[in-house]
Length: 333
Image (cartoon, rainbow, N blue to C red):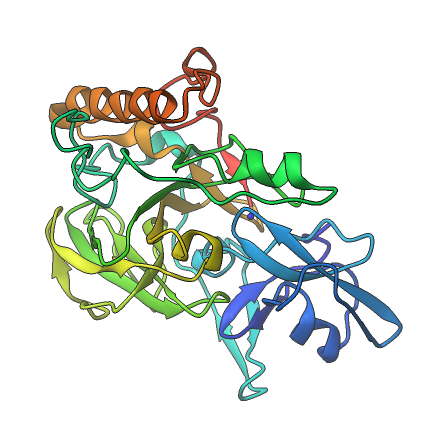
């Protein structure tokens, strides 16, 4: 989730990342990609890159840059008249023209039937809240000068939208850590619009609602399932809410060591007269027939996780307009 000075979308490992200024091709290959060791430095084209740790992994970031690791939003639906994608693997250029957009998030349909996994009220008998495991989970911990920041970031078993910032930008999706092997399910009934490998080596799957058909891999409104592995659906396939589409990703080594993988769910939309991808709060667009039970289950999981860690300050429910989001405002990527 400084990058919008130009409309050109420069792909990094087949995922688009907009970078400031007239960056060189070598700069593009490094900026925002994964790196092996925090603090390690690398110099290319007179630019210094530092391996920086975030709650979503470690990435090469140029000194002084506020660019954050790319999200699937960077490829989803730019409302530019023309966006150029340069893939480092092939160095070819492809022109994509989005066909539709919406004026605001008010046009997004309330059709979400789940959060991308099975969720229910926390059970003290099993220690689970549906798929989420609560009891016995110990979050990763870190030492060093950034220990306080890193430990706070990793205490979120369920990471609500806009709770944290990733290199200066509010996190645009709901992130949930689940036992490795947990199946990811479609949040809506619709058509698979995109199955794409992203910067972290895993996949994003976007499903288009019937109201906003998918054209050439893009839709005015796309429902995101990011950081998944082993996708079992293909572009153009019709899916129902609750259908298995993939497995949670194990790309984060710190959580993987704890036996946990991740999925991030979100809403990506193209806004009229804007050159940026936009995001909306997932909980604001829950199917009305399921909203009450889903919100109650999510609040139950929050409370259970706080009880597990013995810290009632992990989540500030009073600051959430709706469970799962610290804002219901539109977020520009």
